[in-house]
Image (cartoon, rainbow, N blue to C red):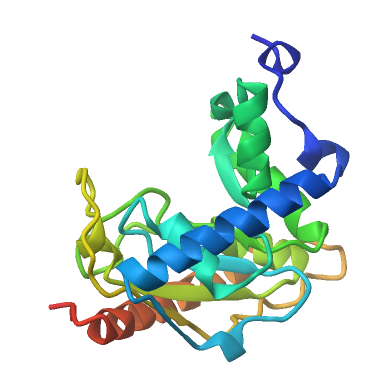
Length: 236
């Protein structure tokens, strides 16, 4: 089935901006979610001074719960962009809502290449982009699965990566859980990781991507351990 038949929006390809209605909806929904998290999770954010006040950056959080995407909206009033599978945009109304919340469609067939291309477009437009370096939800205290996507986009564009430790979200709603527990959640924002400048020809050496990815992995593990301690759920 074609993109036209699916009615999938192509704002990230055409450079279209979100409508005022979507901006208003995002502000309202974010406010409601943030208030709910303050009450239910006693959410605490540390390290806000490490978050750039303007311009593009890549937010790279630990991923332990379905709640993670909603939780990290507490770090900034700016709308962050999230990748989503294209089939979620089959409905015009639901697709409009997802776009308002910061989502953008990525074809699953060409997975990595399409996702990275869309991510580059978002960053080049000056918007914050969320990329989970673990890919899908994981469990446990140690970060093992790790992908180079955030490091690649950062090296190509020169924007910083902002690592996030999320403490307590796995206990709030673990993988496979149907209920949300009222446990304390703590977000620790790490210092920006600045990529090396690309070569004169604009080429990004694979070595630079791997080195930045390794730095991100080390930072994320430290922030994850710190956030878990602060949330009263120390990694063991």
